[in-house]
Image (cartoon, rainbow, N blue to C red; front, side, top):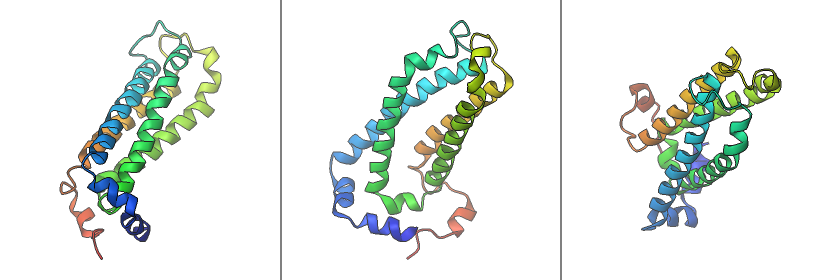
Length: 175
């Protein structure tokens, strides 16, 4: 896999992105703003699932109102995140927090899919309950924790030296 990252690192467009005076900072800013939009709206809905906020609003009403905005934030975040990765592939390849963030993104996706294909199928029975069923609350808590972790590890990616010793021992920066 390292060879794929090394290959992408040598491409002209990758070099241009990382050496451009404005491209990288603009991408990073757009990524952070779009992630705030997405994670904020997801947190809003997750808090309803957990039963801590906006309990007078139906569980199904919230996605109807916020989904287009959340989807926009997610799409922009995925595009800008992919371009950020493309701009410095070898830097991210060796970054502990990058891989931790990617793992949490996968888990957040699994949590969402499981929730939507299991618990949410019976939403008509509990959508107006002030306190949703345990499975919905667990999904909401898991989502809140995962997205908070994704935001934190995204920020920590700038501090590649603050990693566990076992990670350094893997010598991912190698030849």
